[in-house]
Image (cartoon, rainbow, N blue to C red; front, top):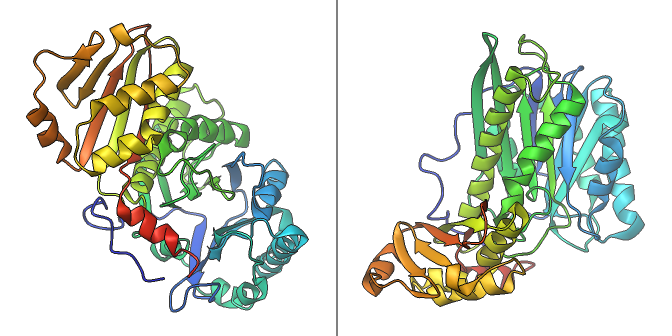
Length: 414
């Protein structure tokens, strides 16, 4: 399959210059899992003392790697740790062979880095239902170890891509009681995106000193309002994995309470990184030409607000109207009505950006169809929905649905 052109919504300037994280080294190689002539396996080696948190897909057909990570994530945090990720093959729905591959890869990395295999977290992304030829990866482990470096994060981010058109990275710097703390992370995702915990694959690293229970709580909280609020095509991956590692090598005071001033400051920075990565996944949605934010206010509850936001964001009719630059607000009304949330036709208000489109159960008297058409020509859009039945709100992010999505997925395995 030919590499797609870079998404028109890709960040200007390409992959960011991310801060190096003390206690983490990266390496990547071309193992030929599926793709020829490109990196397709990455290794991140974590120094002793690092703690690891993670959230994973709730799919009932989740992959062997996800199941393995879920078993390990709350285990002993002694010694070093490692993340090993391959693209091109999801190692999902492969029966006992899938677990054999995970065990072999974990053991190989553990021997290589002289760490406990219970501290090796693997992930795979790509075609579902095909056995993973893990021997091709094991044959490259020595090369991976030899290539470990503090500055290898850019190539690592590229190695985990499948139908992505650009690698996705984000970072932040903050101060904890006067000491600098850094965060850097990357993600992959373009299709099969309707996360039920995170995105397809994301890895975030920090040199902060954070107790593991606090790190886990922060990650789960931030993922729920970032990655869990995006959608490209309403399909949840079998491989969704979001990992966060803290090496504790910043020299800053330890964070032991999520509600402490230090905890709040770090959480805010982490949330910003995850939100940036989540938005980049949407901006690289397969065939996408428009980035859409759906803002819902006036809902009876936060749950209702999220239901409506997700219903509008997931609607093929809304997404194709946006692709065609058609301000078809009736499709938004439809999506609100089918969401299952409490709504009232006569209190419903719809806006495109700052343009009042509909209110009081009908088109707004001052609405101009031409104004709607002109607004839809932008590449970043806001669809506002006020239900008028309460005070709760919610948000979702999605992209348009174009012919490009069909073209990419019609020949995905070819």
